[in-house]
Amino acid sequence: MGHLLLIRHSITDASATGRNLGQGSDPPLSAAGTSLAGRLATSIRSELAELPVNELRLIASSARRCRETAGAVATELGDGLAPEVDPRILEIDYGAWEGLTADECWARDPEQRAAWEKDPFSTHTPDGESGADVAARAFPAFAELEAWLAGDRARVAIVVAHNHVNRLRITAILGWPMASYRRRVSQDPAGYSIIGFGGQLPVVRRLNARPG
Image (cartoon, rainbow, N blue to C red; front, side, top):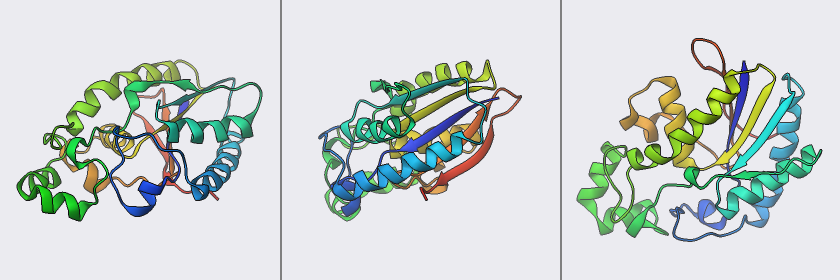
């Protein structure tokens, strides 16, 4: 049973202040985020020590915050490990809600925000994406990777992606209604989950674990 280590990127100024950060800008990690990414990398090294690992891949979204988080992991693990970049796992496109807080979204578009809160999988952000749109581009990337993992118990893939992307994939793996992905799954900055593939069903070993 190969294992997926699914990570949300570390802290940015936007995530620290509760502002939507999708595809409209590409900021770096904050100073606190760089420090947290270092602690994450140490935790990932410890987790790998408990798994059989003959083949190891590191994949990151093309967003700078993900590439920098993955870079910290690569530096900690060494051995020439270099991140593969996959734009399919970019964060949701918030459209007109980019850079806004939840309260600001409610004030701007109360009816659409209410519909989105009820079912963010089917409801689009204004001029942006729905959860279903994100799943349509991101899930094929995960399916390819999960099939590779299922082929050998000593394969491990570390994926550094985003809040909505990760919550959507975890909700699908757990078999929960997709409309509930924002209500039932949490993803903290630099939080990581560990999921095994290769048996009849995926096995969740960690869910949104925090770096030590």
